[in-house]
Image 1: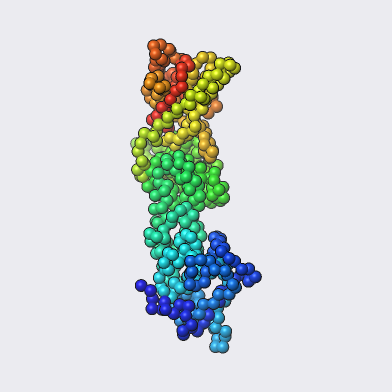
Image 2 (image 1 turned 180 degrees about the vertical axis):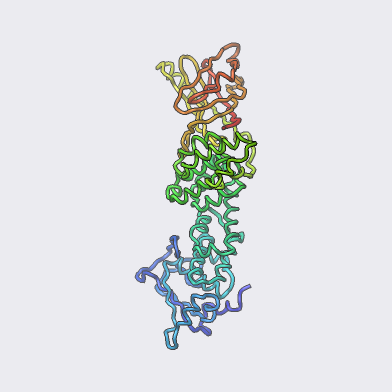
Length: 492
């Protein structure tokens, strides 16, 4: 319900002062302009009635006001009026920085009279996003110390029709609000609303990594939003997924603009102990955003000692103060979506590409290769590769990279492989273990032909325990086009 004072808003009755809004650039007339500038003020060309369209700005805008109302709800105005002397021109002149800034300022004054927030359709006259509009109003309320207006705006951000709807809304709330507003008791609830939106869209980390639209939205997040997201226990996936997403984010515009303090804070929120060993001990230190490189060897040594000396007390009792507390944090508790697709990759080699590769190898006598698109599983990117050479076809599994994430230097993998052609199962492998190391040649295995196709190969786990630059699972004669089914069982 509106305050009884609401009938006095913008009314000449009993008015004893006038607020005069003056554009900073008096020579400029702005029509249809809506500018979202960062900092203290924003833009809009509406007069107090908050019409749905943008009227042409014509210099000064005057609002008849009442000192008793303004002084009651704004210590800023109270102090100003106490300094006034009798006979002074009873006028307050305020500069505005564009049409939306004017609309936000008049909305803030209206909020003092009505003692409630305007409906969302009025806010949309300031900005198409009600969240951005509220931040603009809050900037004026903070300048005028209008605590009641601040409270109404912060409460409004927790309501369903004004909650964040996109990454930019979250960024504006976490980055553009004045620090004094962020210290308000209600701001913790607003942060909770932002976190709820982040978890709704980015909790399932596998889908963010593998779906372009989600990955693009994630890269828009400001460092403060990323910090809020990283601190949550409800992320679904493994800590290596967090590592990959941070690396992808750092490669984008927001990540490139992030300062050293932002990157140091993000590095401190990574739960390093839960990373797979190859990432923790080998790959992490080479990532450009990770800030605590000098502490990592000490931490890794402490982890190894902790695992080895179960009965000898915790080494972290002596070294724990050296490291950020999150480094030894518990595993994420979010429940990821299930499905074989998250650990399986099907590579259906197009018949045309297969035939072309065969022809090139036969004509040139040189090694010919076909590569699958990179695929992601359990914190690492992989790529399958076929090599045609000397009448034999070799299949390899090797580490890969995407545009942002570098190729892993060492990855221990357990996988299954099925190789099929239409109506025939050609090859089936039992779980295979190998260390995939960049920059070395592969161990080759031989194959045998017989009957209607290639028979399963004899398998000796000891012979393939150490495999370099891709794991060659099988070698067999040329047949026809293939479909490969790769299942990643574990990555260490």
